[in-house]
Image (cartoon, rainbow, N blue to C red):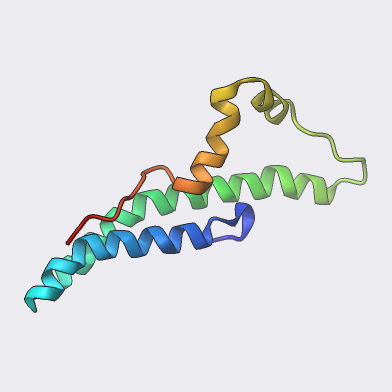
Length: 108
């Protein structure tokens, strides 16, 4: 997980919530199996891959271009457009905060 956009901590919490939801029952019953652990991994693989891909694109296309340029930084038109369209403006923050799939702690 790249430090770009600061999602590492959020994802650690989401990983813990998914793990708690899946593993609490088997742990209480004393019957935790490798397939239970694999279920946690399967549920976290897609959201993590999505965010890592977005981070990579953002880092290469925006930050990389700014760092490589000798010109003053210019905000791409796509980012300027985000400010004017509310649903698009709110999307990056929600994606950073909650990821592509929200997780909630279930009562055990």
